[in-house]
Image 1 (cartoon, rainbow, N blue to C red):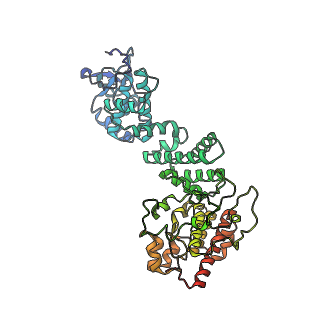
Image 2: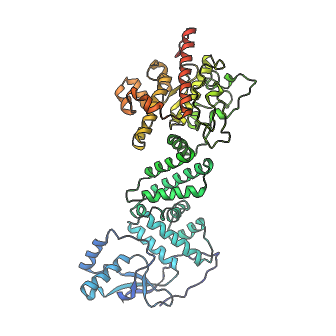
Image 3: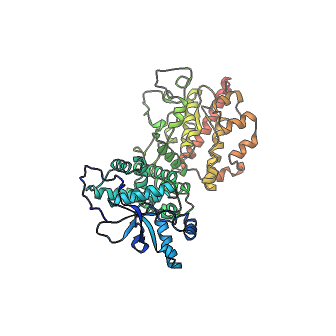
Length: 525
């Protein structure tokens, strides 16, 4: 009854579904001679098991099983679906001894090849529904292995696999195959409980993007090895593996590990991950140009009245404000930078930004006569300092440069409200209190509304609160601690770099206000 196996050339396709029925009419076969297909894609219990069992017990098998027979085998295997029905028939016969369940009608299909049977089961299960993503992924990976053997290839590419599966009547894209291979070979060993519990394709893709971004940051910026990252990622996945898998929990744990490895704040790591996952290039504004000692350092300041005038067009060299906010990135003082020593900041004394291997306990020289004393340069200085503080504390996208008025920058909005659920109390208090310090230095709640509202996005919560004069909206959107906690919650935990920049920013604010008062200039006009 069995067809003879063939050995096709590697240049031929063998995954055509076998349609030849050796026996066109059903024949009765003893269920003891029929075995479930051992590579059945469904690994868990069929959710329709109880309904199918009740139906077979009451009315018997409503349609024949489709079976096939391997070459030289004496028993049959289920060819396309029917594993659940066969198991139920065997159970009912063992329980009742009813002859209705001893032999069942079967359609016998000629043997083609192993992959044909696997794909027939996959098609049938897909049609009936209920297969988890991991079940489908395992079946596709098994098909890849079988097809490679049958085609005489060491490895079959994912593109070739896509073609072979389509010829076999199972349509799937190469991108989906790639996701499935990642799921089986990368994730299944470390989060089996989550996957067997029904973790779907969107979650798998989120984990994949997160791993790629975290691994890239680790390799580019961390002195530890790739093997160390592998150990960290694997350990964290296994730690949080559960039916109630939460990718955000994995991300938070990865952020903590990377922050510890790089010796930076967790907010900085969050900015780095967001940039990597969004495909944005990390750009450090103040590290782009080294100051020329023969030039006036104030000429390197940004923003300036000329270079940031919205009405000017310099032929494409000027970056729009929206582009700037999307590329504000990491501070130059991170330990992975190629120049970990002194990093000059335009308009600031060198002592304000020096880095040494020993803790710097000296306060910056804020009264150095070399500091700028004109509004244009001071505004650029304020923007630079605010941007650095924001970058190191997970708020890089909130600082917007302002040209020709104000304090050189504004805050576009409050921090992401979801941070309240993601950060511990100490981290959240530091971030929110720093936001209020930046808001004070930009006069966000003091500046004339007609001057500041046009600078804020329409969807901004901060804009809505200011426009409607709704203090409750603002205070409910950002945690506002007792000002008496500022020392303990903000000044104490700030690292030396942030502390120096915060003091320099406050000093810059005072200088701007003093110059404006002395010259009779209105800051906001």
